[in-house]
Image (cartoon, rainbow, N blue to C red; front, side, top):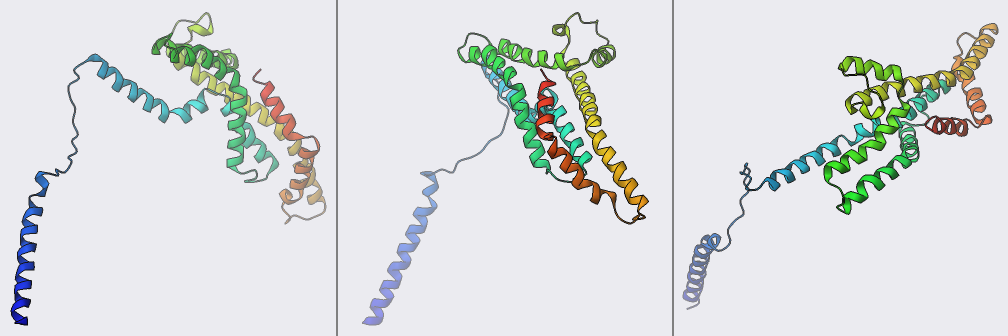
Length: 255
């Protein structure tokens, strides 16, 4: 009797599992799986094309943001001068690159704050209030940056790219194309940075000469002069309050 009951239970469970499997196999008809498709659809309205182009332009600007920060602001001059100062002090990797880049970035924000304020007042705020179009906002936002670059660009560097581009001689900075102004501004910034770096090198170079002469006169040829001159360089830089003088001079050079 018990064996019969056991076999009946097993058969009932098997039939139940078979019926459940059939119902589960038909489940996708009520719970369809999602599909992913990629394709190019025909735009029904011109507005759809303009939205796509705006997204592409925005992504392009975001990807070029670091290059824009380097090319069109005071960052180039600052980071080159700080790097030359570190080499003049012979401190190898001290201060680290992260500190120098961070200091250059914050000084760039400080120096460029009047330009950002003008861009916000003349381009961003009117565009948010829908008083101007997107094209007018871009033109108004680029104008303060162009004016800043024009003030820091040498005429000789500007004339070089004007001649290469074979465009008529501009009568004012407003007539200069942006594609000509940006490279002229960059090489002007590099030249100014190297000039400041040469001035920074001179006092530390004198210390190197004096220390090397003393070491040679004492016959200590195997002793590296850098080990002796490094403390004197750092001491001189600290005594004259070098960071205060350098940062103050760099900020004033943009005014």
